[in-house]
Length: 407
Figure 1 (cartoon, rainbow, N blue to C red):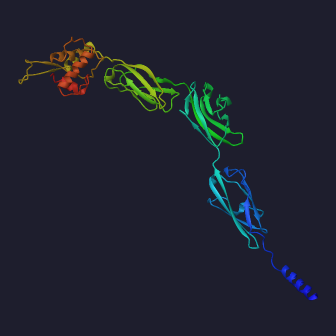
Figure 2 (figure 1 turned 135 degrees about the horizontal axis):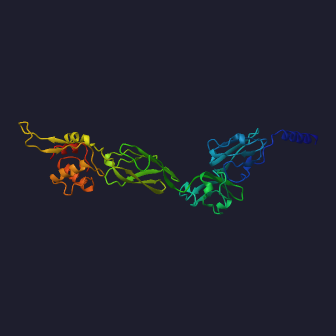
Figure 3 (figure 1 turned 180 degrees about the vertical axis):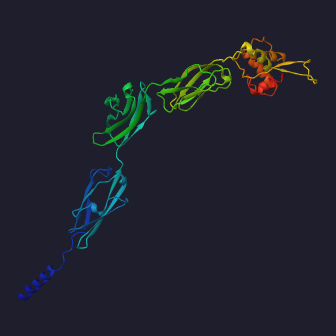
């Protein structure tokens, strides 16, 4: 009997020396990520790994998204904390491995999607350059916000923008006042009841009412041949204005010029004698247009009248004598010598001689009045065409040379 008791005691002690095996296989689960499986960049993400059947496990974490979370985001107690940034936008699957000194292992995965968060923009904006008195409208658009409210601020001192300028639906409606002329940077903030928000900025330039003024007219509205006239077409309320100038002078061409900065200049020649009704037009890419008018007069400058003592000299220099082969003056034909520019507005003996010669040559049918008008100009054009000259309608060097031939 004592032997049997001894055997049982030995068997019991032996059983106490055998390692204790886990009653079930080691495993692990995780709590649901907070604040959810979809978060915005910058939001704190957390969850807890819950091991079962492990003795002081260690943790390894691998993120499917390159550059995302690492093992450093989970501590020895299985607490995971991570702050995704804008570079983490995308889907992250965290593969978490557990192991302990007893050889127990387990794996699990947790998936979190990171979004860019609420975004905002501007829609239905016609132009970022406006004129006082004209309404500015656009719509603030948002994503990731639920029924947001809006606030607005303006960098421009003394701006007439108010919080009421933006409606509950994100529609901005604002009419700039004279005090608003300048550059405005509007900042509109949209926020919802969950505390999420986004900010939109929009820059505007407010211009004054368009105007066009002609300044610094020198020497005035009357300018002589060879004298330079200048003025400046000054504008307000135009964006990158373009200038054009039209001269209603009867000649088809004009010597009046205007550059891209609105600077006009005019140095009249003899052919420019007369009235020049000028129209200066300005326009810009927004379709704004204005005109301004001015008339510049180039007066006729009469030739210097010879004194009585110069009569004989003038007569001798204003005519040519055709002699016979014997050198006598028995067969004499007097030809007028033209020496000066003649055009519309000219008058005097030179014009009378011109009209008489053109009449003799059947180019002029009127009376020799001594005044160079449109009829005389057309006769000169006909003469020039017939002789292969440029039909400009005034008498220049080439036409004078032909006229002095008397044919």
